[in-house]
Image (tube, rainbow, N blue to C red):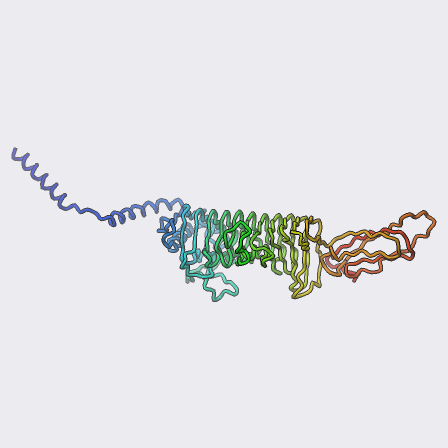
Length: 488
């Protein structure tokens, strides 16, 4: 009994000591322990190469600044693999995913991708918005730009990425390859641009939405094969007929590089829809109703350096395509609405290899030419291999480089006037004609006849005797390579 009593006493004393030593945790301490346990789970989640912004402290509700967290997530994602390359020197990250989890993230500065680059990466699913106090005014929300890659004319740019001393040189000065942005809304909040890609290759921007930009929604410099598809871009949200339209500014897409593609994209507000200053790009299914030509807007602007570009199956909605000194440019299967047309601007005054064929034009009874010339700064003096033909027109003036006309009447002289249809002034290159003499019974000697003048896009046919005749004339303004125009 004494032994049992002693054991019971010791048990009571131990329990009392435990109760006396117990300390109740505060809410802050509980949260700290929760964060520790969550951190251990995050490491396990990221082993699968899916990086969630919330795991790095980003606020998916947009109340707090997520700039640091987003950059930290990207930096960690770009460190997951180092034993494979894509292009020489570009680290193959094996398909790593940076997932926004449908969050709405606010940033106060430009998000720069790691300077040593990488590839085989997917960023998806959420919104990134510039905060009211965005620090990099006039810059971009996101940029693929290594400090090792120069941007001509931007040496003192405030948008330059952070320089790091250990940047590895690549053979081609390409640091970003096979990076995909998908299902993301980029809101620049009228502080700058959306995405900048410098010397990046095989980049995809798919099913994204760009708004609130004041510079460029998407800016591509150099590089190769940046594909922009199934996306929407607009400085101001509208579906047309907006009272603010005359004040739209900025450029939705700027392609200053080669071999890029824009496919199935709608541009609803900007001063310029697409700016082309590189070569061998293609635009397909692009709908531009950004800023009407009547307000000074341009749907697609091709600079003199954008040779070998194809514009196919697009929709120019109350605005135009403006080409400067076009060289090997192709416009086809495109619909122009509301007096939208093609304008050719002379810079050095040369056009080589231009085709504008099989398009539809529908005007507003203002009888605007479907193709017009801007020669305010220079005159077109070299024109070769130009075909403007097979276009269909409503309530606009048909223009072409090929035309036919029939002139009938009694006399010795017939004039076929092509001034209203031919695009270039006084530039007929080839003429075919025939003279049909009516009511010729065989008793009257047939007159000799010939073309006596081809000036100011007028063809004059004269005969040696008066007849009741019908003259049919076909002309074109096409000069083959190396061909001389003997008519002028």
